View 1 (cartoon, rainbow, N blue to C red):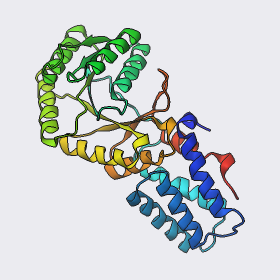
View 2 (view 1 turned 60 degrees about the vertical axis):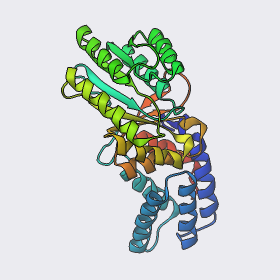
View 3 (view 1 turned 90 degrees about the vertical axis):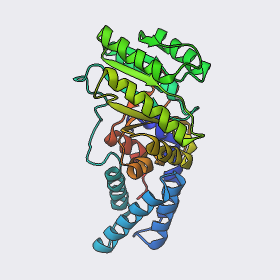
Length: 309
């Protein structure tokens, strides 16, 4: 299995248990088999729209080819799922453009999805690559978020810019980007408040942060990274839609994949939002935030040894 095997283990087991029950003893693809595949896809929280898209394509292939073995069916299923994730991309994504200096990333997401931890792990990974990193603690409504970022910055060797609790988040973002420019930093990671209670407030706050960033770096932010918790399943879709209405999301980081059988959410959100997945969180360790690789992810999802027929 691939580098994401730990992250998709529960999804793999759940999906292939259902798929195996559907195909065991069968010599050809029937409507019952297709129905069972549909149920397996939905159970992994791939989403109804994405699931129906896959099933429609499978039905077309079965109708065209007339006969298809189970191993051929699984191969086509892998192919169809691969088409829906990060469309047009193969292999590992390139998460940073270091030709832009500083490369400014605004990180958004609701409280509890692992947003602050994701920022800390990104900072640690970048510093380990020899990059100079500045972290802006612009979630000034949660003392825990600021304290957590301070710890991560100390552990990773990143610089941190913070202000008093309740300060204007945009002011923190401005100071962080200004500090990064002055220090010749390679990357700026800006944490933002994770509130969805009022979309207008959220939109206004994120727009204000964008605007102050552009006073220092005219083409920033270069990335708006939305962090989602895979274990919330369909709720992650709703969060993605809400944030997409509030700001221009350019990339996704999907966390807590190792603790859930809902790994299909990675496929469904990438397909429905047409936004690339750039990072997967597959554990608590500092090295458990992985750059997304579509080929490796699909290989991990479809463990060869679990395929029947």
